[in-house]
Amino acid sequence: MKTQFYTASSLDGFIATSDHSLDWLFQFGEVDETSYPDFIREVGALAMGSHTYEWILRYLVKAKSESPQPWPYEIPTWVFSSRSLPVIEGADIRFVEGDVRPLYHPSDPGYIER
Image 1 (cartoon, rainbow, N blue to C red):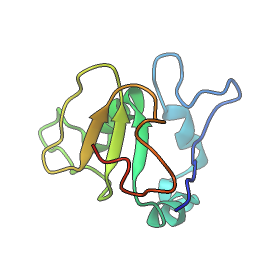
Image 2 (spheres, rainbow, N blue to C red):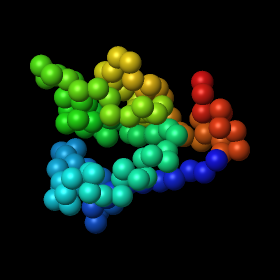
Image 3 (cartoon, helix red, strand yellow):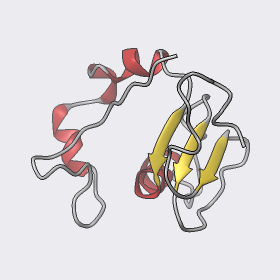
């Protein structure tokens, strides 16, 4: 098993602006025109923070709209947060708190399960 890290960040080292926006990423074109589709096909699970999760809820899932979209990933997703967050029915999302090290052990692929 291998661990891969894929992210975008601005020069200040953050993915989001101070108001939690990812809009700056859109200047680089559509996601399908990047290396992301090739990357995500090889991924077995995701880990993300609460702000990324909330951004996906707002802008991709559109959870509070009249026409919400499904969760965009079919693979298990771990969301790291110290807060309670909305659940997406039918999505394999696991909410966890704290450090990733107790949840992940690279020599045991099932170790992350609780």
